[in-house]
Length: 405
Ligand SMILES: Nc1nc2c(ncn2[C@@H]2O[C@H](COP(=O)(O)OP(=O)(O)O)[C@@H](O)[C@H]2O)c(=O)[nH]1
Ligand SMILES: [Mg+2]
Image (cartoon, rainbow, N blue to C red; front, side, top):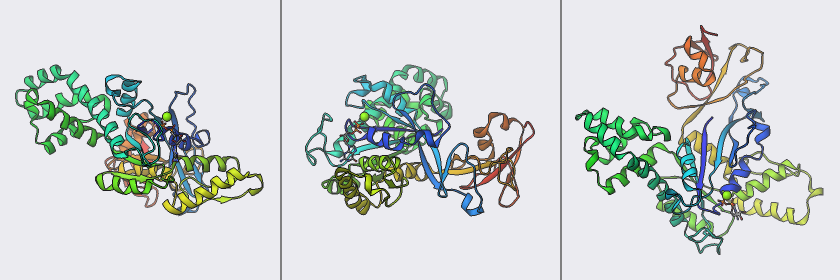
């Protein structure tokens, strides 16, 4: 399953974001963790389900379908303890940095209202500096990446020497210790090209060059969305504008995690009707609302939904997965006519597949056994045979035909 890590300064709102997106964990997935690890949860991304296109009633197994929207589970990690010095082991730093580094993508939660001081303590809104907070956490990540290379410096130097000028082998030597944190040789190669760094010259890289290399690697290998959180606080919109100007290279989603948590809880207790990501909510049971709750919902309506169009929380996850990671949703079926699995369940599974994935990759995701005897796929819309190298598109419905099953 796709793994998303939440990073950000203390009190930026990571846990609030985490609690809101994982609230319906039990309902959306069958992946209940028997030994629940703290900080790990299941959230979902939402995409228009193909059931509407075919006018069929589906019976989802690995996901859910609500009002024609497919809810596909993703793993989310709340990573506390990212403070300055985390990379040298302050707090629970290194453990969480390693979880961040093994994630497929990150959400960097920033308190855009500036309600935290340099140490991450609560402060007067507007007194803090969201830009500084952001750079500080980024710095910790980069130092950590750099540290991994430094720890392996001798080993890499030796391998590069043995490569005797073979550039590809030198790149592999540099990439090897980074393999565990989802950095590929291709990532290393493109970083070196864009920085005009010579892999064969590795042992002469200066500290500065190591730093720029580490930051490039971090940038390329770990797609990151910035969540400009606490947009419900009035001063936030000013900060948001300047933050966006200073970081025009980043995807930034304005949000109120607090509002999303309030809405999801209200929906759960039957007070409002609201689907995550909706542009509005409706009070369905005014009778059981007390004055405080009424005020809270009115506030959210006026200062969040009308200003931002949405709370931004579900939107952020969707943008991360579908725009930044460019995932496609693919539906494997056993029977192309009935669009069903062997038990007759219609459109049982939805898989998130990275852009460029082919039929073989899909088979591998469904079941490793399928790959061995994989013959071809069948496109449910056209009936066409799809070779194993066919690149999957969004909303493809495919029957995998394998000799081994
Ligand atoms: N106004 C406002 N407060 C928020 C929002 N998100 C979180 N908070 C508050 O910020 C504080 C820190 O939140 P928390 O989720 O514990 O931050 P973490 O340390 O990053 O996990 C808490 O008092 C939250 O209620 C938001 O969107 N708006
Ligand atoms: Mg927290």
